[in-house]
Structure formats: structure tokens, C-alpha cells
Image (cartoon, rainbow, N blue to C red; front, side, top):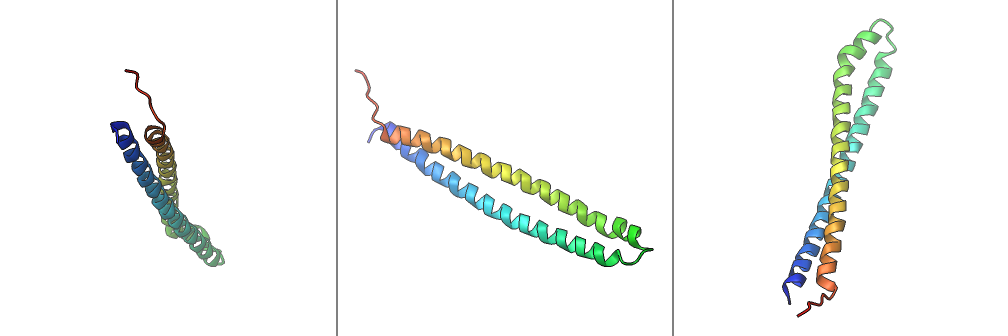
Length: 112
């Protein structure tokens, strides 16, 4: 085996590792989205129950739910960041795979 072919095989292995990393991040992002959705549903349910009391409606929303809504927004921001990261890692994996295949499988003729 020549040097290019070895580098190509290493690139293919690296691309597989990048694909697995991207998949793992995507799975964790989906779990995070599910948790955010559950939290949003709980906040809405709580608002519905406490909204039945006319005097405490504004106070309850400001005191009880503002912190929860801030946490939900922070979670959504974090999820978006990780989605972007997973996409970028996937794109990098495709590029590295293409380079690896080109180096490992395409015969390169060296002029002597």
C-alpha cells in the first residue's frame, strides 16, 4: 500500500467517526426537544389552572412562570446551537469521506 491509500483509509475512518458523532448529537437534541415540549405543556397547564383565579392571574404569571419561560427559551437556544453543530459535523464528515474515497480508491499515476 502506498502512502495516499493509507491516508485515504484513515480519512474514511475519520468520516465514519464524524457521522457517528453527528448522529449521537442529533439523538441528544431530539431528547432535549422532547423535554422542552413537556416543560412548555406543564407551564401552559399551570397557567390554565391559576388563570381561573382572576386576582392572582397577573401575579402568578410574573412570579411563577417567568423563570420557567426563561429556562425554556434558554433550552431552545441551546438546542438550536447543537442542531447547527450536528449539521456542520455531518457536512465535514461528507467532505472527509469524499477526500478519503478519492485518495484510497482512485488510482493516481505518478509521472516519472
